[in-house]
Length: 392
Image 1 (cartoon, rainbow, N blue to C red):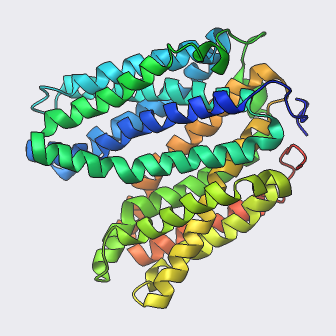
Image 2 (image 1 turned 90 degrees about the vertical axis):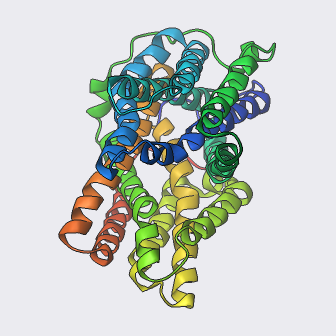
């Protein structure tokens, strides 16, 4: 069990958490606007391979820079790094203007965008882990997960309207505007009470963290979850089209269920235990993915989406809260949040690259069955000695 006290913190935390959740919605709105960037790349004549590389540069730079951002949070504090990330994201969003061809300026903008996002995620997730009492973290990360789903679901629709009405420059301006608003919020009087402004005592070293079996087992479990989630995100549309189903309907149903469950049942994670919830969630998640090849029949379609959505609802918040439990002292929190979120980003990259290669080598049906089967390995990992703060 983590040596950090599991008792509820006496300081008020609801206000800081709401503030951080608003920032999270605004920043993920910026990211969601750029889900439409492939349309712009296609409009300027880019091939699908080129589009894949351009879009992949941002998550790659996010993964590579994440360990450095964890050290920066430990040295300078969450508030400073959050503001740095917002500034980089803002100017990167404006930097998309005038990029008429795929060349080094576009690559530089994508890399900078990823670095800014990396800074924000490292600092904001650490701030949540620091402010929210350990016995409420599962619920807190459930609400954050719901906030992210809301941004991902709603903002691309707004982006489509901006493009139709005013063209792609309006998309870039809209993305910059939401981050500018987030930046303004960090200068409100409540900010100094919402985010730690100083660094942590002691230095952050990743070697001791990665030397712990509990940490490595948890990171492996997270990677298996995100590999499956990213595979569904990237390839469910192809599978649905092949079966004559609406391309976006599967994830829409699953994400809607996950959103509702995170809001209404997030507190159960803390009440009954993170690992217990992850065990059942891996089973639902894995069965849901394995059944995707059979969704041409209506009953199978809804069973698959509901199982996948139920697993998706709790795996993300429980895994992040469990990552915070691995910190044995406060200065290790930035390191654990950086490692956990870096593995999330790595899983999204591998879920595109490795799963695409596997689908070409075999078939989409075998891909989904294989990735779903990997989720059962995550289920087994929850029986290993991974540290967990005792449930309430």
